[in-house]
Image (cartoon, rainbow, N blue to C red):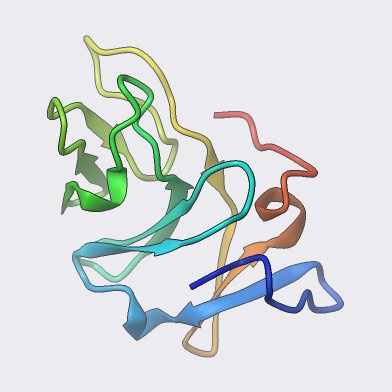
Length: 123
């Protein structure tokens, strides 16, 4: 999936995929030309969340980690990252950028300004 070629709706949202396209539990990647890829995560309960696909520790691809509950274990050094806030579990410190996710009619939508790098949420 590539966010760069997707249309932005009147609310400023980009439709990136169907909810079913994201395994539960698991992840799927949305590619961007700039700013790094976005990892979409789906918890075993079905909640969809999105983070920058880069661990705050050494830059490991979070989309390749193991999702459990609402956390992902980084595949490089097993840092535990919260999917809701992008922050590492103590004693580790650091946060991955998070993205606003809207699930509507079985579709996953992301905020276009955040995806295109115009605005960033605080972690």
